[in-house]
View (cartoon, rainbow over the protein chains, first blue to last red):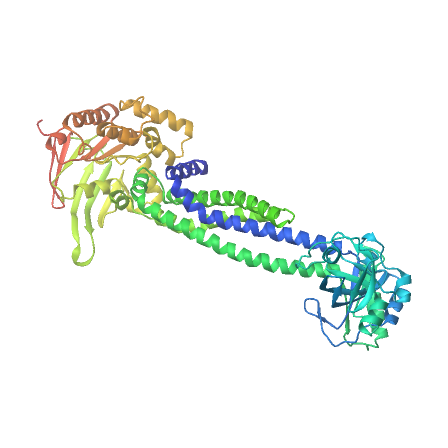
Length: 403
Length: 235
């Protein structure tokens, strides 16, 4: 029997009990929709994280103390860096364009009547350039500020709002860790990071001021570097590594007690994290597909029993076992494929809605769509074959006599 | 009367046992029967006499426990499932007591079914099925579903379905069992005409002597054996 005829037969058999067919496909609809939503949201989240990280400065490098551990963590206890290290890097690594101190601690900031806790960054004047970050009011930190250890600061949008509201903050004085300090600029707002941190909840001050007046320690916790060009990141990394090995007197064969990280690694790490999440959720979706498949098998078995007489008639009229087999198999596949297509539409609509709500970029990965539809066909065949075989192996006279 | 011709269908010492162990029922106890081309044979007997079992074996719907069934001299047990299906498809036509039409399926689609399994193209199926329905007097009712047709009309659809593939043998199991006397007479007239005008061999199971009288030969079963085999009764 021809496939077209068989398919027509299957479709008309399914249309005879529309509600039941629809309910039967529901499991697959939900499973496929879930797969699509997960894949789409995963891709959207990855795209957002990647965009955000490269927005931090795609040729940015970070130098942190401690050996690399697993997924980018660095061990504590390794010696910090010095001013001399920073100067040496700028002087001796041609692939490094600029370098900045980045020391961070949590502090209280106080104005006349406001008082809040925020992150204080001690940075070099090059910091904002490396981070590709601008000020929207006032100015940024200068070499002059750094040289003099000036008591000045640039504040993030959150601090401006909380401490000043509608008042112009430029030139105002705030107390940072009990040190009076003049606000000279306000940073462009960046909003929340992927991890949900408020990136605007910070105060920047010259690294020298931070070291002398706040910490009483001039050493450097983290260095931010920028490579001369995006395609020179590896070169910059190699130069910094060899210089630092030399300066920290690390012998041949010994491991680094510092780590140079670039944004690509962070992107890769984020990719891994979203990948793990996506595959976890895909697992849930797969279980849903399995349940959907069992639903189809169940209904097909009921259908075979209900239609035993029909099978008997068909056998008496010359249907071969394989005609009966393909009839029921095609019915199962049509059911699950219909479910798959409905799920695809539902999933696309769902992920579009979710991307609006969560403010993620909307992407519909083509391979996820193809996979979902392909999987639904496989589900149909897998769970349809048992009932179909049962139908095909009925003996004509017994099927005809079935009441 | 057709003595020198080769039989079309031959049952040789056919035994059929249903069930297993202590609960076995011996439906046929060694039946020999030859059916020749162009005959109209009525098989009679009380219920449980084995007549329906013999009929099912003749139609390749059931297999004997012992003995041999030959179609044109070829033993059926040597044939594969697909060949048996092909045999049922284009050599035999079946007419059942309960009509056995597919419900919620139009008369035309019901009649087309054997052609579907014979891989006939859709357009030719329509033509042949319409012609078959016209031959049994149902032109214009092609789109009707079985539940919209009377018993007699349903049996006509079933006969059209049995004939659409131009079979050599029509196997009718109590074809008038569910019909009133007048409709029965119409159906029997149709079968007689098919036998006489087209030379289709007909084997018909019935327990009604009046119906059996339409046939040219009467075979009577009792307790799994043939107890009489004679030409047409005086009507």
